[in-house]
Length: 232
Image 1 (tube, rainbow, N blue to C red):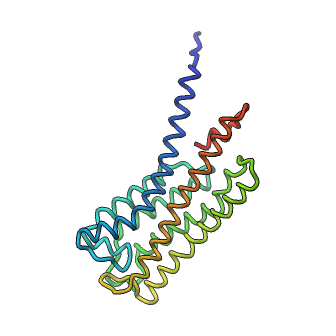
Image 2 (cartoon, rainbow, N blue to C red):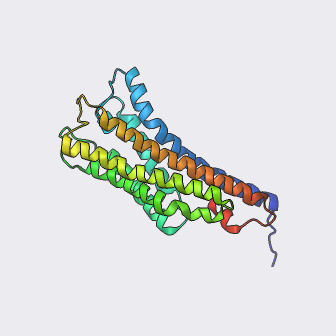
Image 3 (cartoon, rainbow, N blue to C red):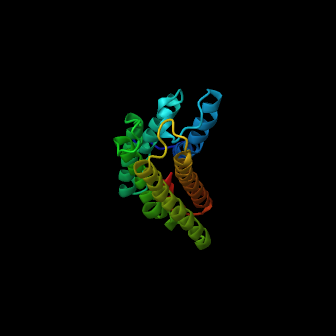
């Protein structure tokens, strides 16, 4: 019986490819979120679409394809991404389903009513808030610098609270005060949603920075921690 010897260089190249793939997925989620509200707003103006009362209101404009496309892309990315632990992975999968639900169930003209669209949007952020507040710190056991651990914990806590509070504010403005309706004059809901989406994007960019730096430190170590290699 002949045993096949694995080329260490090939094995290292495969590991680098896996790391790069996951890093690209994290960065893609982050930058897509950062770019969505700006694209809807600025490209919309170029298409003679005035700033809408909410991001969801863009569904009823010529910017519909951008709105739906980014949501489907983000949803697919969250479904494909494997969380560090089982609980994180399951909640991220649920968030991906809700993101797609936001696109599948568009906002209604009677924005004052609770809709599937609004329920999916709030549920999406609740899932991500849970990950930021309770699961994002799981990987920090591999960070050696206590000051850096404290810094990441603070950032994840702030972003988690933002992703929890801002969507609730937006939903309250829509359901209780009928802000953000299609054709409405107030743009408050749009900018509250803008901030919530940016908090989501910032979370993924910070998480990518944390993991990338941790992996670099582990690669530089004479005895890399196998758990760190699994992070990618």
